[in-house]
Structures are given as C-alpha cells and as structure tokens.
Length: 92
Image (cartoon, rainbow, N blue to C red; front, side, top):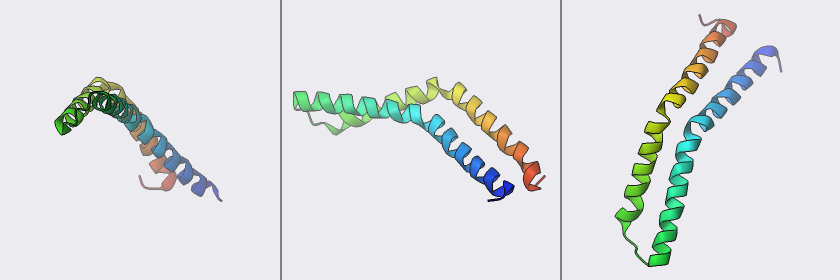
C-alpha cells in the first residue's frame, strides 16, 4: 500500500471511531432503559406496548439533549481533521 492508501484507511477508521463515539452513549442509554423496562414487564406480567416505547424514546431524547454539546465538539474536531486532509488529496 502506498501512502495515499494508508491515509484513506486511516480516515475511514477515524470515521468509524467517531461514529461510535457519537452514537454509542445514546444507544447504550436506550439499551439499558429497554432492558429495565423488559425486566419490569416480565416481573409484573404487564405487556403494554406504550410502556416499553415511550420511556425508551424519552430516555434517548434526554440523553441526546444532555450530550449534544460534547457530541457537537467531537463532530467539529472530526470535520477539522477531514478538511485538513483535503490538501493531501488535492481537492482544495
């Protein structure tokens, strides 16, 4: 692999890591709330659909709003890294 191919692979890796950093915490909150609600439903034999959907939606919305500023900072840093690489590829 030449230098350009390695830079492309590095950018793709950086993109995937950034995606995991951005989506991971929100998805984890949804997972935890979903497991807790499912456990509660199994213990109480209450199988109401809105009881499983509404709390998960509210938890994900709350986590997104709470983490919005750090997520935007991570996204801005990633955009800076990508835009500085444009010179390497001759696109600027």
